[in-house]
Image 1: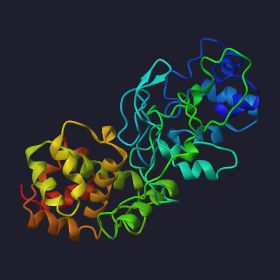
Image 2: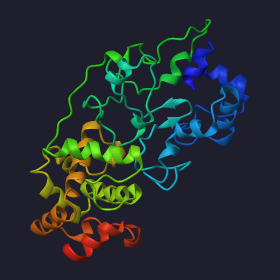
Image 3: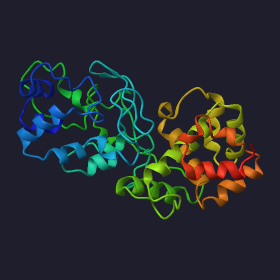
Image 4: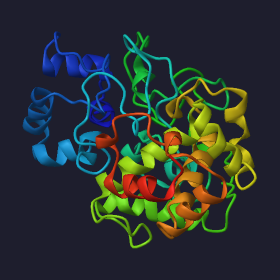
Length: 316
């Protein structure tokens, strides 16, 4: 939508106010997460692009894979929060790979970069960046034209809205993997999300939604301040030293962690389900991890493949 406005040599807000009427709210909502049908209809009419293609560019394209449906309000575990306050973004809800931005002839931001578990670029294998390294501002490229009183001249949307630093020039940091299989597990994890079918690596279920719901529970268990979960965490720390940060502050949730912290949590969760169920079963038995570490909600809401192992192989 930003590139469309700039292509017409218009400020983003002015362009959509003229085309969609003044009472249509676009920028004070998470438009990636929830794009109303009337906006999709208008975009389709004005651009000639089909509504299905436009909708597929939003996060709702992950329905049936990451979640049953996107929530209009409230949190989604797998979607980074923007911290919307009017048109301002108070959280680092959009991350980028500077190298991917630099490699694109026509700079654009990928929807995958809005997902909480996507912390490492699967092309360049560096950590993503969720803020401007020059001024620390959240990445909010749509705000480039705000406050410009003179005639607007389109500029690169890779420039920070706050200080004009070119995000393509940001320094990158290669991802660190605690276990030899970490990189392969991560790659297969996102192949499952992108292709909409479970990888052979995760021989748990052919439905990604069921696999991911179990992984969500594992991540919550690893990051919980539940006394039973502490046993799990202490058993994992020798294998994943990066998890030490949870002991210092167990009040934060997964979406509030830094890029590197989330990466370590996901790597540990994927390691637990590798060679399912043998590794998980042996790990829990050897370290006396109770099922209470994982089940903090109605057992009927827990994925069947995880419940089966918790019932038979974990301590009660």
